[in-house]
Image 1 (cartoon, rainbow, N blue to C red):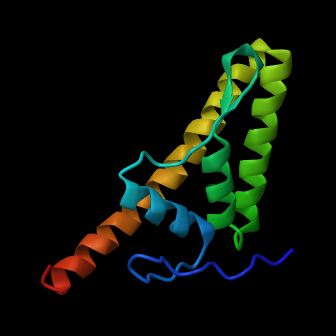
Image 2: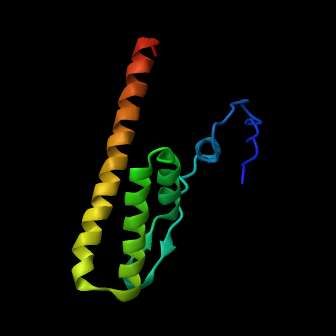
Length: 122
């Protein structure tokens, strides 16, 4: 399924490369919190479905990362349904690793943006 071209912002005319950028822009303009819906699972687990989808999109061209993300998601779903004690630490480690990978990427992007802004004299 091919996603249709996302329309420009009607207020400022900005063009977006993906729906995540468009949504973030709309929420920023409205002063709203970031959109990150959660799927509530049994045993107190939450699947951050918004973050999951963004992460899958970001790693679309990196199959090894996609494999890791889908495995940790599957393990989280399994743990939520069966609540196995042995899986809990394993899953927590996978989730921490996944978030740290995302954090590293976000930090690099932020630092690159700061460097570009300084070079532009902003």
